[in-house]
Length: 302
Image (cartoon, helix red, strand yellow):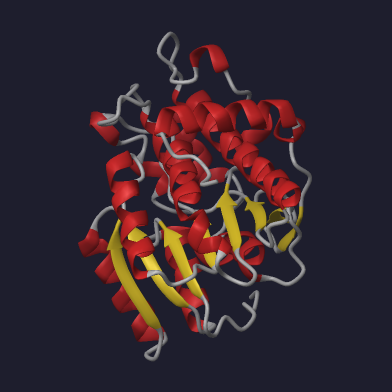
C-alpha cells in the first residue's frame, strides 16, 4: 500500500469525500496529518465518512462541508466560506463526479449534468479557491480524470450535448475536459511564476458507486454491456484505486502536469502514464478554459 508522506500542518479539501476514492483519499490524507475538509453534496453521508475516518485515526482533524458541484451557487458559497476564514489552502483534490447518466439532464444552471458535475463545477471551485491556494507555500491541485478520456474529444459546437446526447460520450468528454483544465492550469502556473503544482490521475477500473449511481439516475439502469463488464473486467477496490490520486496530491515525486494511473491501465500500483494526445492540445485547453470562465463567471483574480 502506498504510504502518504507527512501532511502535518496542511489544509486539504477533497470533493466527493463521502465514498469511494474520495473517502479513501481523505482518510489517508487525514491519517498522514492533514486537516481535511470533506466537501460533499449530502452532509449526512459526509458525517458517516467522517466517523469512519475518525474510527481509523482518532486524532485526525476532519470537517464536513456541503458542496454541490452541479450548482454554481453552492460552489460559490463553499469557496466564499473558506475565503472568509482566510487560511491558506495547501491541497485541492477534485475527485467528485457522476458517470453515464442515461438521459440528458440539466442542472439548476442549465448545464448538462455530467459536464457540470465533472468539469464546470471543479473548474469554478479551483478558480475561486486560487487566492487561498496561492497563499500556501507549495500548493497543489490534483484532478481525477478517467481512462475514458483517451477516446474523447471536446465538441465545442455542442459542448452541452443538446443536439446529440450519449451517456458514455458526455462522460468521456467531461473527463477529457478535466485533463485540459489540469494542463492549462500547469501552463498558467509556469507563465505567472506560481509555485502551484497541477497534477492529474485516473483510477483504472475501480469498484465504487460511481459505476451504478449515474446509470441509475432518473429511473435508468446499467446496460447489458456495462453489467457484464462489472463482473468480468479486472477491477480493484478504492484502497488501490485512490493511490494514483494520492500520489498526484501528495508525493514529492509528482511533477507539474504529471498524470498518474495504474501500472496495467485498469489495475495495479501507481505509475506515471502518458497524457492522451487530445489532452496535450494547448489551443483547445485555452479555448475550453475561456468557455468555462464564460459559463461559470469564475475567473482568475488580477
